[in-house]
Image (cartoon, rainbow, N blue to C red):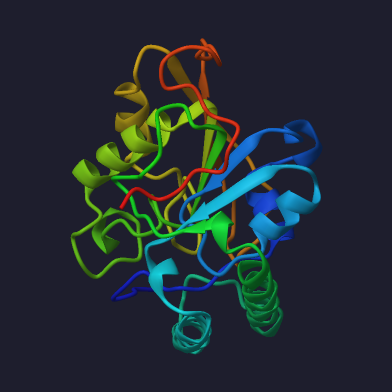
Length: 254
């Protein structure tokens, strides 16, 4: 399957917990960044669990009606592609997949209407946050997923090449105190394999970081393993040190 652009649809909070191998109870009282957040319901779910969660996405500059229209259009567009795609198992329930996207959208719209301060317009590889601002940084369905088709991704364009991935990963690490989790870390094909850029990115990690692949139970129609990349910092920056997080929700730098 190939996509001419990054599609704007989200996953439910439950889906995010599955593909990030995430236990929200372990992060209660911490700060979490979801980037890109898209029209997903993770931020609302995390807040309800006592986690200070912020979502970042370049399309958050749009109004709620514009966001809803863009999401519904992209869901319809992607479902047409998926129906013809050889990358999915024949038994994969596309109607249930679509319903999950619509449920995520409704939860997103309600939460953004109620908590607009938690949804900030920003995009990789340059985020408007101080260093070590978040305890945990999540990045779903962007890195690796939108690599060029020849490299195991979905993109018809070369925008998200290996150089871009290095810059994006460096930025995700910069704004995290403790962990970064990235999904998927596999190629987008019927029988996925570890994405070929995982190894060079791990080899170039800063010395204070280490990374490993973890299997997930998330099922998006593939045959085989669908790993997530988990990166951990050896030494956590002191809360009283330079660049330490404040107690306030971050605001976009104008």
